[in-house]
Image (cartoon, rainbow, N blue to C red):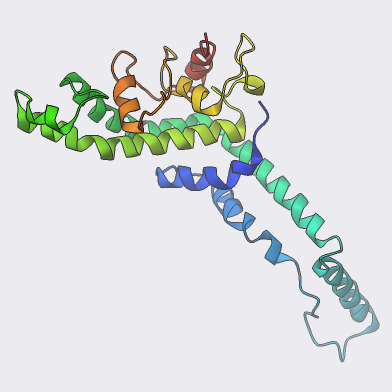
Length: 243
């Protein structure tokens, strides 16, 4: 799958929010992407022109000419910025692809901690259809209430990991993103569907109609036992998509 470079500017902040340590050049490159257009040189001399030798004046004229051409919105400036922008996107995406396994290793502990909160709730009988009234009718109300109250924060973490994991595959093309958006049987698979192969080995439906994310994580934490799969594991799981 060809990486979707337009999401590069989303990926880096998502990973940083999850505490991932990225190479400094990736962080600085992502930050400078948004300012690239403002970095075109301005047509002003860098020093006083009076008193310069003819050779020095020639150098200044050359630099002024380049700056004037780049500053012209109808000239090569915008095209140069556009090309540099694309190259920087490609370099960030290539670096992220090279360290994708390390990225997953770094975010797995926070995912596992949040997933364990959801799994505990499931073990207590809480599911995607549970209501506040059900909690009040539990045999051990205090335990059920604590588990129920912990779900929102846990699922926010799971959602953040899922969003970053989807963007990682979209930008770099690493598994489970299917080739050309189709599975092994030629069926079209959308991102909101194929990302499930990054978290479940059984390829259960990732999101059902009218289902909130907290309900989804509870449903998936039952028989599937959600986990942040490695790239190799996600590639295997992706083969089952859309069966």
